[in-house]
Image (cartoon, rainbow, N blue to C red; front, side):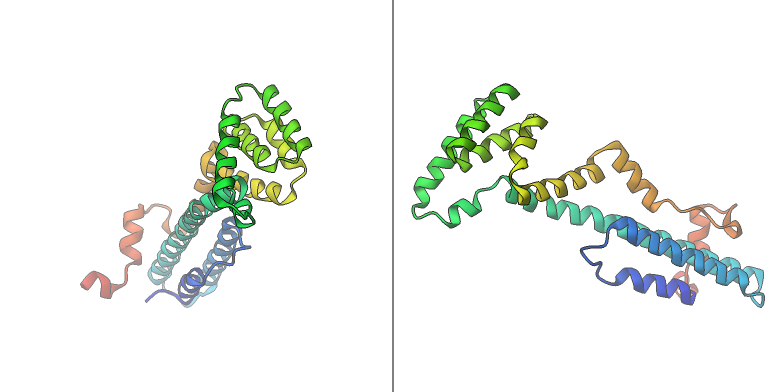
Length: 222
């Protein structure tokens, strides 16, 4: 059977993760439990060295599995959130919801997207956005903002977001996801999240050896 600390750690990772908890925070919590588990094992002088080694292996294996679970949940959450955020930022559900004539609104949206697609330079986009804003044409402004985002015309995107606090918050959430999942630094951060140093008791063992050492005898017998 796993040690009590390993059982508690496993139970902790089964609990639904609050939306406000970032994977880094959950990972830090798990590492804290891991360190405390090792401290308790090493402080128990009544344990036979072989028993202590087995318990350390179980704690290490449980912790690695927990960290990988947190990482996988973060990836899944980001993948699920991205299209929703994208629709909130660049979609027209709000426009359609208040439209008396859906067909007319859809035609207006298509026209705005066609006009935005003709923009080839950031300077042209910036001027077109300013004119759309002056005319109160929010549909066209959104289409231009999306076009600028697709073309990496950051100054134009920032101009679009400057007067739209909700859109700015959604954009910031998307930037966080992009940073986590699609940049070299984000990939390194994900690798760091699941990285776990072996305790001294297991230093010379391979991962396969640790897996075998930590396995429940009932499992291996089956």
